[in-house]
Image (cartoon, rainbow, N blue to C red):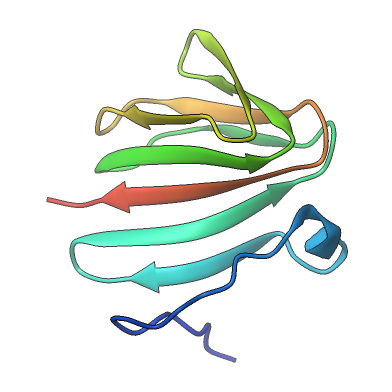
Length: 106
């Protein structure tokens, strides 16, 4: 089954950490210039070190997590940052967490 991506001007309701039981991520939109997804991590879960080809933004929506890029940055609900293109990074959830990831391609 194909993932539903939002159309321009379509309102999308972001899931809460209560929805984590059946979600790991939710693709929101993917175009030729950017993509956005909501990612869920359970306490203790990790996303291994990787890099993306474009600039990336991370907005923690709920919970608390560590971003290693390579320095350790703790993010809590409401925190936002951006990463330079191609910068290696990983995530580790200190508690059940949700974050919005946006990647901008050139």
